Length: 205
Image (cartoon, rainbow, N blue to C red; front, side, top):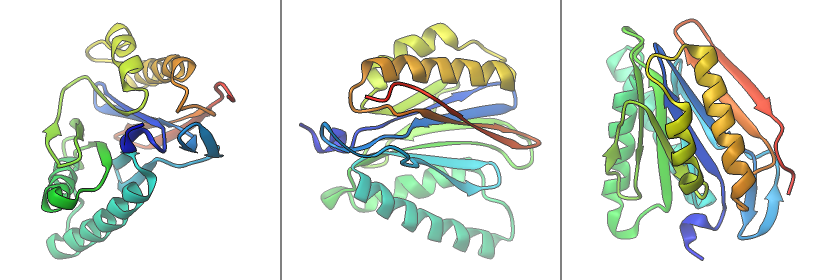
C-alpha cells in the first residue's frame, strides 16, 4: 500500500458563482483499521480561505502548522487579508523546498478573493505543482471515484445551494465506493457573506 493512502480520506472542492464548497470525509485510519471517526481534514486559514490536506496524517499536520505560521506572518507584514492564491503559492513553495525529503501530503486550497469574491480552488502534488481548474478538484483515496460523478453534477454558474448539493452528492457517492473514506461528510460552503458548515451522515463501515 502507498504511504499516500495509508491514512485514507478524501477531500473535494467545487467552484460556483461567487461561492466555493470544500468537503471532506471524517475517517482517519491505519490502512484498513479505523482509528478515528471525527477527523478534521479541512482547516480555516483566513476569513474566506480554507485548506484541506490529504495523504499521510502526520505530514499533513506538520504542513498545516508551518502554513498557519507563514500566513500569520504574511498578514502582520502586509497588513491585509491573505488571498487564496497567495496561500497556494506559500504551500507550493514549502513543499518544493522539501522535495528531496518530501511531505507525503496533497493540499487542496479553496476560497474567495477578499475584495472581488472571485472563487479560487486548486490542488497540488507532494512537491507543490499547482493545478487550478475552474470547476472542481479532489485529492485522497476516493479521487478516482469522485471525478466522473463531479463531471455529472457540476455546471457553470451554480449558486451556493446548488453547489452544496452537487458537492454533497458527489462526496456521498465516493463514500459508497472507497473503503478508506467514510463515517460522514463535512461540507463548508463559502460565500461573500458567511461560511455554512454542514455535516452529512454516510456509511459507517
